[in-house]
Length: 183
Image (tube, rainbow, N blue to C red; front, side):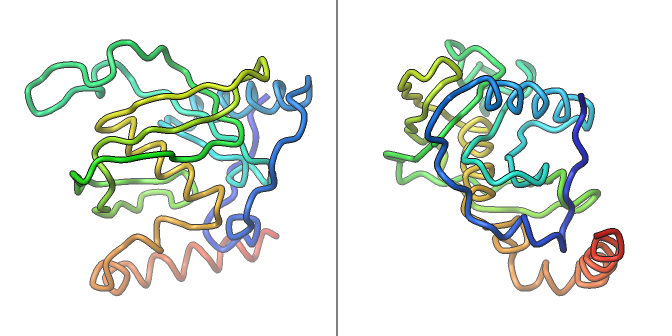
């Protein structure tokens, strides 16, 4: 079942997610519904807050054709998609950064350049309740950082430059107003 996306202006997007204490059938069902919703909306990632939930979980699926570096080689060839991250945390990163355009399902048709670490190490729990670790590069690393921001109540607008916020202020105000009218 596809879930409705919470858009900018919905207060749930600013809530810090709570730890998942038990990976049970409800959490597995939430992960399935989040993946279905992400696919339907053509996103690369989706955090629980974006569907009105406050559990510390997000899903990611980077298409193979998008998982390439400047040398046109796969950046994460040994990582199988989709990924479900429960109680994730970044445990390390390189000093190298990347600046790239990001979009967000909670900010339809709004894009901004955002600076992120190029590589990250993360730990998380999988759907079987097992601890996992991952070393991600490029777009996958960017997606992990973006979705982890959501779990901490940090939004795309918070990562935009001041100039970009000013340029998008009209769109952002309209989106927030439209969201609040539907709550």
